[in-house]
Image (cartoon, rainbow, N blue to C red; front, side):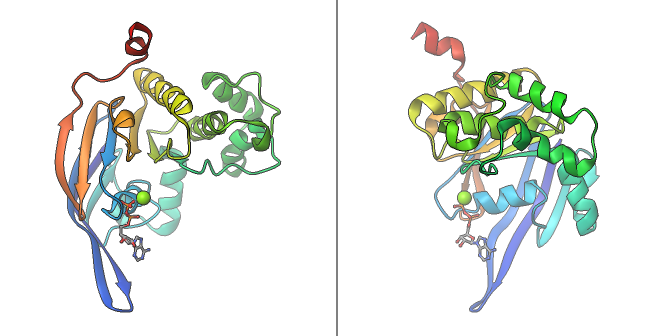
Length: 234
Ligand code: ADP
Ligand code: MG
């Protein structure tokens, strides 16, 4: 699904070149749910931007769903992004004063897809918000807003969902809800990569990758992965 080989990323600064990623090799297979962890400034968001085709690496190869995206033009990259990737952010990035269903439907408007309303409704039902279609973001809790954002990420049926600290702005209860939702989506076949600072979040994943100073320091399966059932029996 994702194959990264020798990914480096440098930025030109007033003080000269600053290298943030020093050579990342990472494969993510279909059906995995990967946590990317590491201290602030370790390059997690930079890596996510590359994974999400929002930014190009300085050197290295990136195969997404079999396509070498480092060889694509800006326009082709934007198209690949729209078709293959669903994004979820810490700050939800919903459009204010706009209904949940409209927020979810918007990515389809740009692609000229038909039956947008029905698809948006189905996506919101899938995340448990079938009764909140007409609510605007200010009428929703943090956890509900993140559900809307997840429904929006699902709408194009992406090959992969990328989430950058999706629970960073949520309380413990909403964090649990959102991670249970991601776990359900993963069980239904979604491939998910989540950046997080929180151990609790990583415990819901199948694999934990630890980044430090722009290099992968460890990459291990999660033992005793958390599930909904653990909570019920606890
Ligand atoms: P993390 O998400 O792990 O906290 P980031 O990937 O956001 O880390 O940032 C890693 C480092 O790269 C930081 O020191 C940051 O200041 C720097 N950085 C990120 N994006 C840019 C950019 N566009 N230009 C210059 N420096 C950047
Ligand atoms: Mg970050």
